[in-house]
Picture 1 (tube, rainbow, N blue to C red):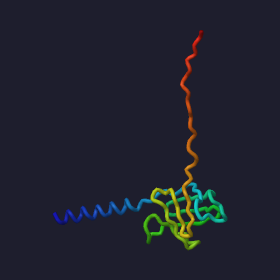
Picture 2: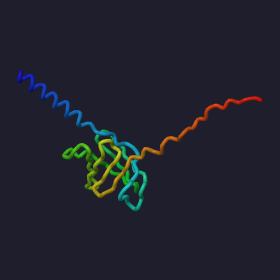
Picture 3: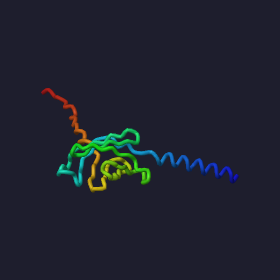
Picture 4: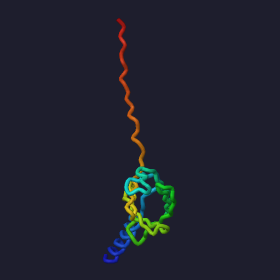
Length: 125
């Protein structure tokens, strides 16, 4: 019985580790909303994720490659060329850099409101 408990515990630990290693897909368009370079508040930025490799294009058009920082929690990326880390929210809606810049996912404008009028019954006199 003791051995069975040990096996179940090991299997549960392995299953939990695999689930916690899942990451969010960061691919998409973002907007710089804080501490933007060259005063480019609201400028578009782009993130492309391919497996563990992440490409970042800043509001000024600079491109950088980032990788998961395995020594930190799963919500952190490392940009080697800038010697800087990036933290992203669990839902992938916000990215924050060590220098204070913040990118917010651009989900676009809300869909247009479509008003439909009820048909008018025409009466003849």
